Image (tube, rainbow, N blue to C red; front, side, top):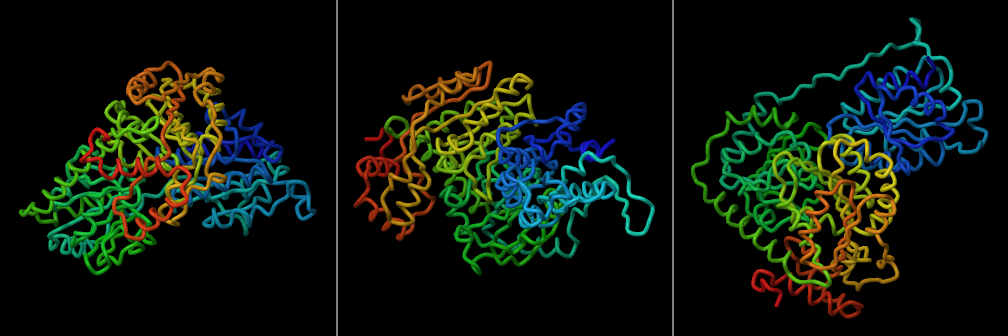
Length: 592
């Protein structure tokens, strides 16, 4: 067996059985070996290496396994970077295998010669190494997988193309050689008893407890519910933790931050105790003011502790195991006034969301697109969101039910991740319905090309239920609203307006199903048609770009900036009309 054949075999022995990538002469040996490895290594050919990295990141997020991608030398390696940064910033384990020019050519300013060791040093800072001899490859693969898994980060192995076709040899039993093995460690899962006792003391003394959960609590649904009920607390969810708790629970306040809810804002500003579980939510201004609440934080990574809020007690441990150990130490809250006020706020919020979604717009209110889908979602559906205003509506208007999954590019907030995320989700769970929520900017950036990947593979999936919903508003909408509210500037047409594109017709060109909607009454039936389709669907919704994604709390500065922007706003009438409707939705249920 040669080096390339060994690489795929070793990765499969670690349990990595799917790789996303694109061929090239820098990985020619790996390409040939991969064809032979298909019985145990599933290969997904993407349209662009960035998409391979996004898919590897999404695979890890949805499955809990290590994601795997590969790319050729030079431009292929460079293309991986954005998707790898998505994984790194969201603490997601991904291994990248990258080709390099022949060892004999390095340092000669050869074609496609890039200093890959330095290029990947930041994104794969925990482990990036170039192989120089066959005997080195085993421990490079082993360390890359192990470190990615244990550190929940990106690692990279660089393989020169002449090395790839050399006969593989195990390292010798000699000084200077190392002998590694496979198998993940069983980590310590719970903190020491003293730390648990201190945390319990803080939480028991709290009269108004708020809980914030993130992606680290996705596997701890039952434990979070039990803790919340014991403490009489409300629970907010960071966006990557949206699926951690079902939204049907009366004490779940929904999202936090600019995409969050008013019940969450009120809870965070009114609580006297904060319990943060498995989250590195970045925006401290949406948490309690330091000193106003006592804090307890649980995270598997000690580097995340007391990062956003000065916590009184910090616990390193698995979220579910730590909460289970903590529960017997907590006293049942008898006074449920705090919980009752949270539940009342949540009920009012959902009514407001419905009122806002049903406000008229020209031609369609984008919120209604999501509101109409939510009760129609199939059991165990998987949803992916892209960056932009589409993330607002996904965050607020979709009610997660138990068993569903959802994710997006969180820490990086990269445009164009929604479709590759959805493709990875469908490969990982081919029997489940997958829905990608896309803005037209993101669809034009990456989504259109990756629909060719869908065309290539969809007949291999167990079911054809795969929907890409596109909000066609011909505006880079989130940035447009940020300019209005944060900068006090009107929409800049030269940068914000994007060309129209026939997304639904494009689907038909690919042999898929296209559905076009430009009337509000068509939204529900269109979702029904898409969910029942016998092939993947592009569902194109013609929406109004001037429906504001209102934050949960409007500051005086935001209000002043918005008013200032209207002086030169080219779409002033529409912006004012829609903003007024949204602000007064609860008292203008018919949009009048």
